[in-house]
Image 1 (tube, rainbow, N blue to C red):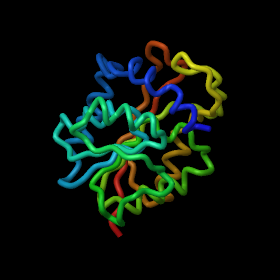
Image 2: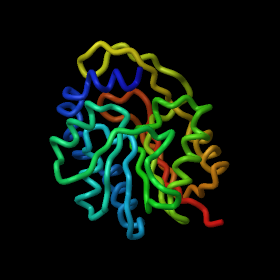
Image 3: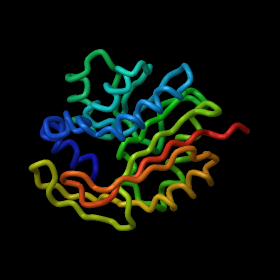
Image 4: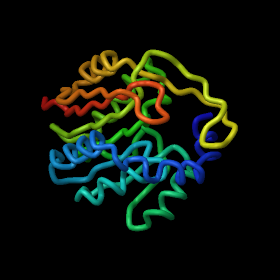
Length: 205
């Protein structure tokens, strides 16, 4: 359902969000902080969509690739950013070895995951990160499921979850992450809810 929706909106999505980071100083700062703190090694953006955040982090000096559930999103990402690597895949089962990644970005890519399934997702992200590896999350704050029937100018049918930051932090801690940075901001522009950002690191055993 989510994959089909994003396959449908891929081209329109690329056009509408291409310049979305412009003027968003908080987001720029968080992405720069993540890039500065990542140790040498590979980084993966999970749920990369059309690759705009992957490209941004590449320009900040990271060795980064992108992965998304939607083949059409990946097709657009490869076309718009041919110098970067993108692949189709799921956060539930990553095509990466244990302790193989220095960092992971999930920029609004957990918003379609029911809260009760986040433990399994975070366990998989934890598996592939090196000790002290970094995880950056962005998501819409709240505590509700929203049914979407229209998105990016298309008829669709899928769910989005506004997530309680306290709950997400608790699940991260249970998955053996240490949350170092926690930021909320008020809605901007078309947004109807506040936004949450978490920077966490994999604890050493």
